[in-house]
Picture 1 (cartoon, rainbow, N blue to C red):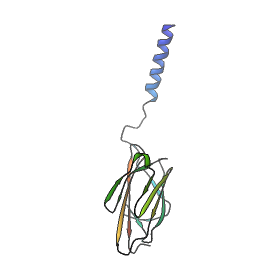
Picture 2: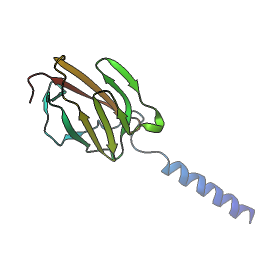
Picture 3: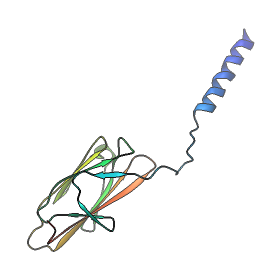
Picture 4: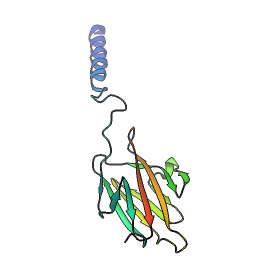
Length: 140
């Protein structure tokens, strides 16, 4: 009976060892792929937001549940609290994750501004991505 118990324990340990390791080495995650639902213009990796603002949706195609890490609006960084990592409310923009969809809403560009910038860092675990936006006068 003792030999049977030992054999069972060894079998369980061996199965755990085989199933706990994945094929992907640490740090070798696939780059996040984003679908720009509203077809915002993209210039050199920066999405161009119309001066009148609006609501824009981006969908992560290869990770099902990303979340916010940080937001930088006009050079001011806002770290995201882990308990509120699905939503950000700023002075001129809001961000909200629902599953793999990120909704960004921006206010119109004030008359006193020529432009303003937004960088949104997101993650899905060990993979990180920064989405960059610029709202400029003359973009409609």
